[in-house]
Length: 485
View 1 (cartoon, helix red, strand yellow):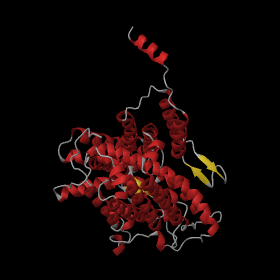
View 2 (spheres, one colour):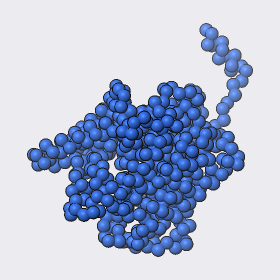
View 3 (cartoon, rainbow, N blue to C red):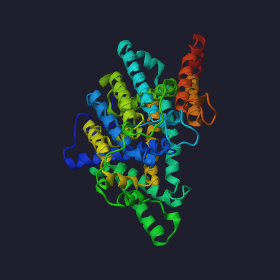
């Protein structure tokens, strides 16, 4: 495996200056922030805390802390050889919502919170089991099950399936939740500045394009909000919501500056979890864990191409899976969400060519501190979705393009009908949203296998049943005679 571009900082290297180290780590935090906090905002939105507060807002800080703790465990498990950041997974949103509703009366705002740590424990066990099988039987069977013609299109689906989220954030107003051209403009500023800094930037500017892009987009959003909304009174220009900062200091107390997160294991507002429910939780989470294992492998193969070394061999897929799986179980206890490898941060490594695991380690520490430092967290929460949406256009596109690159690097011949059928099945099923739902109702199924999982399964099936046809001697001679005419 050869590197197309020399890394500026390799895995075992660190920045020479503390200031550079800090800003490079901050870039990773900003890259994952919006996606990380989106999971609790979606999953916990119908429920309240024991004191009657908004549970979704209360679980943001625990989710950030869990991401940092999970990443640190992963880095230790992989011997600081894999620059991966772990944070909350979108793949588990559907089973989390179903698990929270187990045993909950209609219209109740008290969730079944304890179902989530149990579900994440099952996920961690599956990861460890697969890791053990790889340790015993090697990785050959997995390579046959998931060859590049399957993994490449799956990576493309992962990136492209996130595109709707990026576009929604880019074009939606924070105040009216409707299409907004002002939001679009601010987001495009963030996107263009990021691309310009990455392509033309010198020295530090080329290393932190995402930080500079987000700062440029945020400043533009603040100016437009200040002039249009606060100056002229037009709601259409209200794209930055300063309420997290304002509410934090109204009234001003000690907790306005330093606060401890409301970790899930500290909460008392939950219905009881019964043994029959444990079985239902297992059915909800185990199928999805197989999908995220595929995402895990895809992200590590993608990162391997960037680094120029095979992470599946060193530190090894056994270590990376255990690091990811156990981190998910830990996260389940602290915030209820699963941890997973973040393609956004893999993209940051690919674009900046900064692969230092020490930078990722500092980013993990910063994520933990962010959960306790209330003013900083509130400030980051004022960054509008349109700004992160503009940057996400590049990040998610980079993920999808990495899938294409995998096909090219592995010399996959797309002229062969087998490869065409395998790739087309995965792409259409994944991007089209072909999910499998069992039990319950169509709107509230008991078990949901996500479109990425279905696409991967169909791809594996197609790759297995479509065997390459051997050319007959006559066909080969005819082909050669035609080519010489």
